[in-house]
Length: 345
Ligand SMILES: C[S@@+](CC[C@H](N)C(=O)[O-])C[C@H]1O[C@@H](n2cnc3c(N)ncnc32)[C@H](O)[C@@H]1O
Image 1 (cartoon, rainbow, N blue to C red):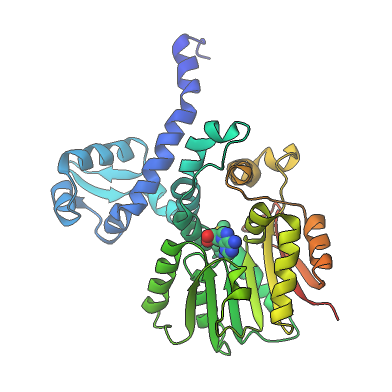
Image 2 (image 1 turned 90 degrees about the vertical axis):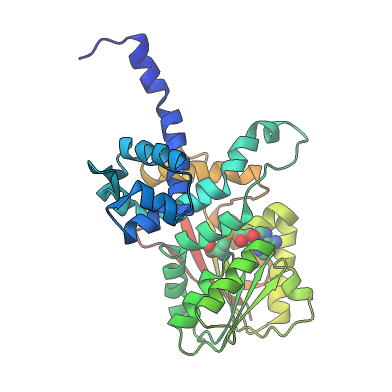
């Protein structure tokens, strides 16, 4: 066993700093397009990479050497660079980097100021939160929504996605559900609306999908042509709860089913269990839900328990037709919960 020295203590103490730098570097690896480039063109010289991607060759070399030292790229004797297996294995998890690093790094940096009494919320990058969240949903919330939809007595033919982020749900459901005639997405971030319109166009769905810039509440007010028979509200009620309080959520849900009485709703929420060390102390709890749940009070979002939401649904005149959690292969914590709801008779 090595004797403890100042240096061994320092190495231990610097592990969070090392991983802080690494998480941001991996986010940039994806965002700059370097990852995708190397995936498509392995074994390319640094000179060619910098020319093709119009990157500064000196800084690119430093970035690539840093990633090599951390085990994410390999360099041969002729300075040709390729992704390592570790990097290839990382790709499915990119959306977690998009949301937690791209979306919420400003929040962590603003946390000290926002901790003070009478301070406002810390900033976040809503566009990256939307893109990342939708990417994560691809693995957990979208399959959960499908399982809940399959339990509905009515088929989804006209879908409304409230807080649609980059529009991934809308595209997914248009492609997955043959009987889906039209889908509407409502989203308050102008940049996310831009992303959503682009994604819809890329998939040739302009005639089946409309993106509306506004809050979920505006779906009730605006003079628009909405006629949904199904709504998905994925990780958005806790946003409305932070913005408008419990009564605000109840009034919003009442207004929604008041305007569309035949509506079936799928609501996806995260059980707020930050105080429960059993859930937060290891595995996905420690790796994801602990930081994720901590960010919420700092950005005007309020995670709550299933019993809280069930009482809200009751007060809004909704009945619960089904309640499920994620596939345990993806997330075994049981913290992500989906409800299928309809107007109580
Ligand atoms: C965590 S993301 C969820 C994105 C997507 N629904 C999903 O399931 O992955 C939360 C989204 O809610 C949006 N949002 C925030 N406040 C909202 C409100 N009052 N009405 C509708 N959407 C809202 C945010 O802009 C963001 O795109």
